[in-house]
Image (tube, rainbow, N blue to C red; front, side, top):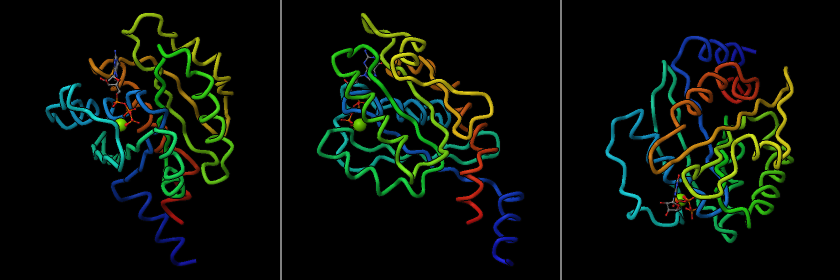
Length: 198
Ligand SMILES: Nc1nc2c(ncn2[C@@H]2O[C@H](COP(=O)(O)OP(=O)(O)OP(=O)(O)O)[C@@H](O)[C@H]2O)c(=O)[nH]1
Ligand SMILES: [Mg+2]
């Protein structure tokens, strides 16, 4: 009882820290997104796109937004690496799913990967931000088209908040709005509260 009380006290009065897991297929642009997050919120110089290589391990970025710390975990999206994602599920407060909106040949694969994530009990109630990335590329689906194709229909009052945005990671477009939505949503997320006081 006492530890529950202390956990709730800490939740109310200490600076919150939220962990956000960045996932999606390989080549979707996850690391490019993380580089831009660090640039926008920490003023760090982003790695030039040519210097970003496929992720094998884990990239971490920590940013401070309106009194909350967000820690981003960027993992590799290659098929052989996806089984490693689950080691982060239990401690993830939020999920950022990045899609290459111009790669229509792999949309079905991306849809299936997202479907499995949302069906995973360890991720129950997790706020989901989807970036329909590469909006600059020819033939890219709009965020509305991605929303429809992926069957993402956030119902008012749903226990699993969802938000879909169009981004162009290599130019840093759309990222700021998405990260602010996450920070705002995580503050009132029952899952985040449960993880922080648990
Ligand atoms: N045109 C365009 N290219 C992008 C954009 N975002 C990322 N890319 C390119 O897409 C390629 C893959 O980007 P990464 O950030 O490495 O992708 P990733 O999702 O981290 O890939 P893995 O680490 O293998 O899972 C790189 O060549 C990027 O420069 C974008 O908004 N527009
Ligand atoms: Mg990467």
